[in-house]
Length: 214
Figure: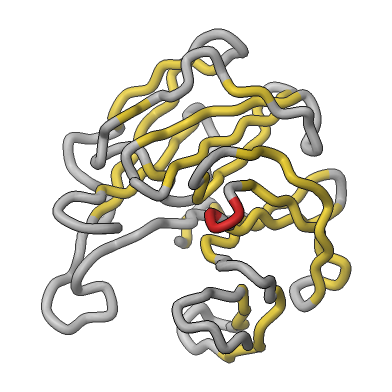
């Protein structure tokens, strides 16, 4: 573990029942801050895109030995303060949402292959100067008939609530979305609870039986 105050590393924990968890240790330690580990599969491999805003870049890592060993693959995007990159594949193309450290801008990128080259969408930024709906807040849901994007509300402070948006149209030239509900999908529990002051993101997964965990 690094000794730099406030600098994050990526660690892991395991559970057999989603209730009791056992910490497994640090798996990625770089000389810059790491957070928001977005893990996904592609072509039989497991990849991760952690948040690396300190170096103004989106980095792609591949699991050499999951979950304990990772190797750097390449830099996908370079932009000032880029953070919380959320990637997904849809209709043969790759798409990537990314926020900024001011939490008020949402950018969209696309590529034909995971390793790029990545290009910014002509409708990007999707939001600018918007502290409610800009910063990504978890995995893009691509199952069933809807594409769902999550965002974190950063008013009155960082990571207070999570909102959901249905992506209506996404092509190389067009992007449209609408709120999935007029209420946030995650809110603070209040008091001294672990999530008492805010809810930062959600990572939903559908199980084989049709139920969801997050």
